[in-house]
Length: 600
Image (cartoon, rainbow, N blue to C red; front, side, top):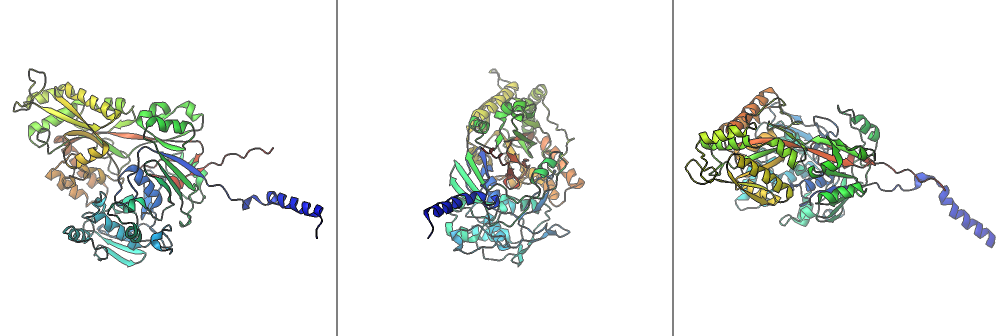
């Protein structure tokens, strides 16, 4: 038996011993990145999500077959869940895609405790969901009219029956669990870009069966195979994502692009395990000032600096010196988007293709000072654009000049010439002498009110009475799709970085979908259909020029501007560069470890 003195000595050694063990045995703390979203997410079902916040989170949770190179500019499609880029037939109608083996869904009660591997059948199931009439998916355009047999399967379900997910169709040929051959109805060289869309991500049929999608329950229970999984969710307020530790091992190995700053990012990140950040804490803050204060106080690591906040952080497009001195970082790019001015082509006052209606729309377009709108409503955080395809997107022409230039005097002469006379009350009438009023719709809120006032000034300069409609964002989208708005401005950000994604905005069959102005022109449609059969190159670019010029001649729309995206990051964020297409970049980032406190 040990003496009391020996027992005390042994106890002392036990207490000291942990401090002598190698530091490698101590568990490293989880790195946390705090992110701010401007608006609440609508849900987390790839089939039904269209809002930016929801898409961002889905990119982290779900896998698509393809994604984009993090640093390459112009952007470049690369494999994600796919083992390699697809094998494409010479006519662009057949794609053979192979899947990486060993990818598994995150654990969920839907799998009854079993480890559930991802297969190509999961992608086929998920793509069929987009065409299921019960869902009315806003993302059905990804496959609508493209895959052999898919539209017919959807048509059968729309006649009153249920969608037969188990029925094989010729367009989806499963060669084995990891190999899929897709047969398209028409040539499409952009399919890999479509398969990089969050809406094309894989969802397990067991998850849909367990939670049901008739009332959106699947959107509340996201189960994917991505770098992250859902940890906590307070709708419209807070979302926490945790690292998916079951993800296939992946190492940060991205080649630098042409930007000299890419070398700094590569030096910070090359060779590290992905992801480095184990926890993403997302808060929803709708007020500009709240977001700014959160970032300034250090309560947020990364957030988007909206146009209203730009003067607080930027000077001539660069970070203010006092913020740069604190180590804050700015990632700035011109978004691959356009904002266009639309007139409802089905409206009895501003629509139609008669000479007087075309003259009216041209006059309105020439009376509006786009640069003034950029300066006043966006604090200069946009660039005047004239071509329907913006910079950074395949098919853009930096030398194109629009026929519709700012010229209020000429606009008034045009209206006089086509019978829009100024009455005794100072306002113009329609050519038949009836009163004329234009209703301009904008988003409810201070920014929308400011935009409406600028347009009121425009209409007043050509003696046209204008009334404003202030609508919520949801109602604006709804009324656009229903061809109910008379005049409005609307942005479109690239789903994928190819010109076809922008030229389709004026394609007649896309009315009630993405064709916001309900523009229907047989010649334009013919050219667009022909362009879809061509790969990117001079022949297709020539058709795009014809289409852009015809759109102007008919004054079916006016291309206005593209907005800058400014992302601010704290000094501690490593490896960050905003991507033009990807919604989130969290798996590519790291957080600097704070220096250890000096020993006392």
